[in-house]
Image 1 (cartoon, rainbow, N blue to C red):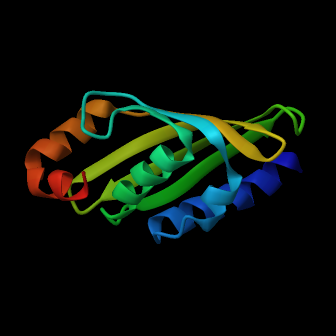
Image 2 (image 1 turned 30 degrees about the vertical axis):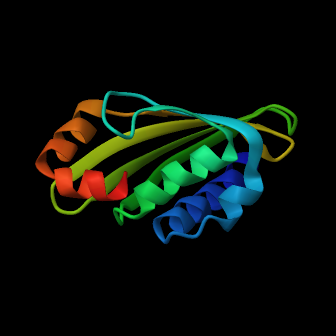
Length: 137
């Protein structure tokens, strides 16, 4: 039942993000949350605080990604919940990736988010589309 509730919530979060609507993310993210996006692309880095995370999401949403949530699993009590979301991510006709994101949530607030994906695909996409990567930076 717990995972079912998170499945519906996370599908809505990703749908909202791709539409450029960050109200739910803003409400759920702790002021001192951390987001880790691996790799050497311009998206890669460790982002500290709600403002940096929302700026990253704004840049990502500007690329009009398509996200298909495949799996959501949640465990732990409300004061230490872990959520794993696996999804397919696409931008345009030439970028596809399979992503796993791990969320650490305490009392309904996102404290930490880590993405796991093929970072070479991101870097290669940026090399093919420097104008898009730069326009959203």
